[in-house]
Length: 578
Image 1 (tube, one colour):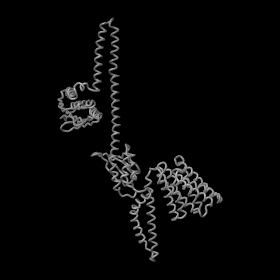
Image 2 (image 1 turned 90 degrees about the vertical axis):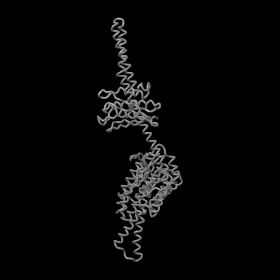
Image 3 (image 1 turned 120 degrees about the vertical axis):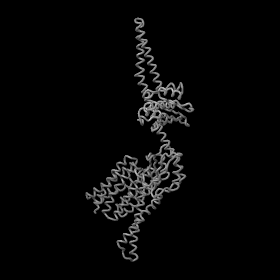
Image 4 (image 1 turned 60 degrees about the horizontal axis):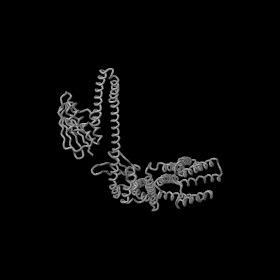
C-alpha cells in the first residue's frame, strides 16, 4: 500500500477531528477546539500537496503545521491554563519537540521526538486526572480512553497486517474527536472510569497470554523438541482461555487502585456522606458514590426507582432502608470494577448512612404528601367558594333584589292605594322569610349550627332522628359515644357529615330500619362506625354519598373504609385529632 493510500485513509479521522474541534469551540475547551481545526486543515493540506505531486519541502511545511497544533490541542484539553509548573514543563516539551521536528525536516530523530511528545502528553494528562476537579478528570479520562484504545489497536494492526492494518487503524482514530466532545458536554453518559479499567485490564491480560503462548511455543525449539501438533496447540489455547477470566478479575482491582487510588477509609467515608446528605436524594446518592468510589447508586420504593446517580452496572447489592419497623425503600449500589462483593468497611458505611437516607426519603414523601394535601385543600376551598358564590348570586341575590323593589313599590302606593301597599308588604314579609331560610341553609352548609348549640353527639341524634326509610318508616338509629374531648372544628364537622351521610345511605340501600352509630376516641384518633343489618339491595354502588364521605375524611387527613357482607354493611372512619 502506497503512502498516498495511507494518507487517504487519514481523511476520515481528520474530518472527525475537525468537526469535533468546531463543536469544542463553543465549550470551555475552545482553545483545544481551535487547535484541532487548524491541525485538521494542515492534514488536508498535506494530503492535497501529496496528491498534486508537490515538492518534499512544501510537504514538510504543511506537515509541520499539522502535527504541532494537534499535539497542542491534546495538551490544551480540557483547559488551556498555565497555573502550575507541570503545565509549563509540558508546554515547553511539546512546543520544543514540534519545533525541532520541523527544523530537522523530519529526519531520523522524528521518532524520538514523537515519543517525547507522547510521553509529555501522557504525563500531563495523568497529572490533570489526578489533581484536577471532577469535570476535568472525567474529560481527561474520555480522551485517554479513546486515544489509548485507538493507538493500541493501530499499533497491533500495524504489526499484524502491515500497511493495510495501519490504514484500518487510522480509521479507528476517528473516535478521538467525538470522545473529546463527550468528555466536555456529556461526561456522565457512561462510567468512563470502569471503561478505562476494562481496557487496561483487557490489554494487560491479552498481552500476558500472547506472551505466554509465544514463550511456550518458542520454548519447544530451545530445548530441541519437535513442534507440537495442532491438538497440542488447541489444548494450550484452552488452558489459557480458562485462566483468562480469573486473571482479569484479579487485575481489575489492582488496576483500579493503581489508576484511581486506594479505597477510602470507612469512618472518613461515613463522615463525608453524613455531612452531605440533605433533602435531595440525588445529592445524597452522589455523596455515597464519591465517598466509596462506586459506579452507581439508586434508591427505590415499591419497585419504582425514585433517584439515581452514576451509570447502571450489572453487579449490584441491595440494602433495605427503614425507619423503626417501617420500610421506606431500598438502596441499590453497583460494585466497582474487579470487586466480587462489597468490603466489610463499605457495608458498614452503607449501614451507617442508611437511616439518614431513609429519613431523606421520608422527608421527601412527607413533603410531596403535604403539597398534595395543600392542593386538595385549596381545590376544596375554591369549590366551596364557587358554591357559595353561585348560591348567593342565583338564590339570595334575586330574593334581596325583589325585597328592595317591593319595598319601593309599597312606599310609593301607601297613600294612594293602602290595600295594595298592604298586599305588597305581605309579599315583602314572605320574601324576607325566604331570604332568612336561604341564609340558614348556607350557614348550615358551612357548619351546622346545632354543633355549636348542642355538641356533636346531641346534634347527630337530632339530625338522624328525622331520617326515614324508602318506605316512609322512621329509622331506628342508636347513637353510642364514649367520653369525647373537645374536638377540632374541622374534625367535628367531618364526623357529623360522615355519620349522617352513612345513616342516610343505610336508609336508602340497606332494606332495614335499624342502624347503630358508634363514636369513640382511640388515642389521637376519633373513630366512627356506622353499621346496619340489611342486605336487601346487595353491595353499595359507589356514588356521590360514598365519594363525599371519603372526601370529608381525606380533608382532615383521615381514612374511610366501607364493607358489605352477609351480616350487613359498615362504614368505618378514622379521623386524626392532631
